Length: 423
Ligand code: ATP
Ligand code: MG
Image 1 (cartoon, helix red, strand yellow):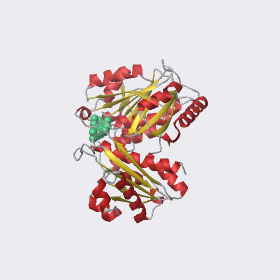
Image 2 (image 1 turned 60 degrees about the vertical axis):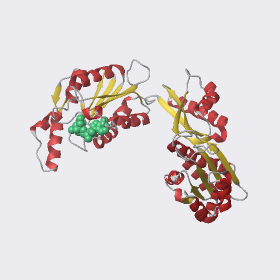
Image 3 (image 1 turned 30 degrees about the vertical axis):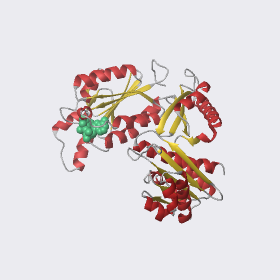
Image 4 (image 1 turned 60 degrees about the horizontal axis):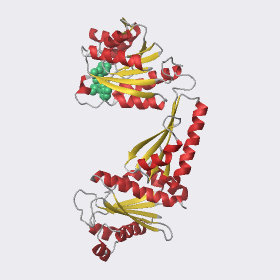
């Protein structure tokens, strides 16, 4: 197990490069964090520094003092603005040493490209003494790895198509081998919840999981209208951790009932799709204000062709008439955003598609088009199913056009899921 003043090892990620400070997004940093998280290693700090020797060295010294694992990326090129090797040598107090096999690998790579390396490339074979070379099968710059003061340090090149494969191939296996029998000691399990707000969930679940205890409870708004509830345990034997998580998740499921969509990794359309599949039923969708978003979310699930038949974006009143057979008098009397029209749209798409279930949405996404009686964010949803199942709902969402559309799509899918659960 890693020696570390704190009981649980934490990681820090340092992204290096002037371009990152000029606004180019640091995509490596979050990608590295995600890979570490999948190994149960929690990143507590991410920093970005430019191509400046004192700043890189300072950042590395600080991070190496505070974190058990430090991963940096960028600045391993052959040019004078590539300073990570030098800065690491300073921070680690280990002079750069020429690594003959690394130089041979660089020469071999150039030979394969039918070129000769420039003598300038030779600096890329210099790594802090005592560190292990991390070969780069995707580019020229090798990385390096060092275990120091009970912690681990890895330097990786900046191009994402080199950095991330090298992390997976050379760094993660080394981290796993030093992490000990219980891994890095952070384990999580999560549930996706619809139809409840964060405050409501806190009030309901908070008393079961006090802040200072284990498992620790946390919330994340995933998609507007969908919340991920996560339980985390730290520094525990694997078996005990799994048992605590399983029991905690089971208690939350019991408490939330149908509001719980299922495992957090499973999306809402996937959950609805699984129910349709299991029941051997099919679905068709009639969308107005969501403009195809429901169909997009349904079809983003692999295998959705088993249950999803078709979707119609009936935006204009004329389309509601001709495509879905919504009666003209209904539109004239109640307006396009109304429960009778939502019901007629759902029944219409069900009839014309031959699907078992028809779902519909009609609303005012904004920012214009609202009236006192029908304000922006007013949305009517319909559901027509086998037998006599006919459901309509009216809701008012507050927010931008995009939020109104996304929440409408979520509610439509959730309405369907809940009906399927009752079968
Ligand atoms: P080398 O690739 O020679 O080792 P390096 O590691 O510093 O040098 P750069 O030449 O600075 O890499 O950058 C190469 C490419 O990788 C650039 O397009 C740069 O924008 C991109 N890049 C570097 N760091 C990051 C990062 N943290 N996130 C996303 N892209 C990055
Ligand atoms: Mg760079």
